[in-house]
Length: 122
Image (tube, rainbow, N blue to C red; front, top):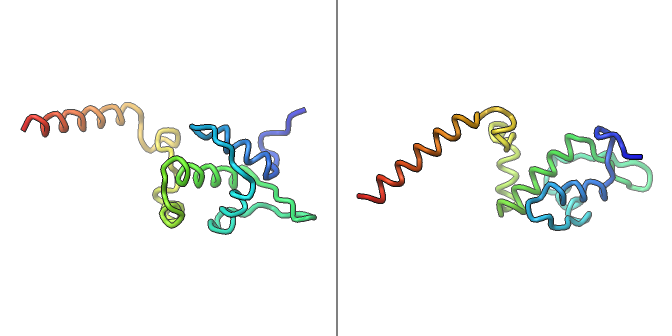
């Protein structure tokens, strides 16, 4: 039987979630997640008896963002902290949160492309 999607997850389950959401499917170690907890104060799992960590959806989303910034974008910890502390850039996926519509994005990309072509011909 599978756990409810909204149920708290163990650190091992979170590591698998991060691995599956990663582009390169690289294994994420639990010690890395514990290190990120120390570095990013926003990540606050419930810690119960025996120091077992349990993560809710909010913490998992934060960890996904940290993972994306550090492992996929190659940012430093300080750079990732600045982005996560800035409320304007907190939502990284602008298309899914609706702050950039795909139609607008396509128009912007076409405009940038034409500007690049003009620069190359000069």
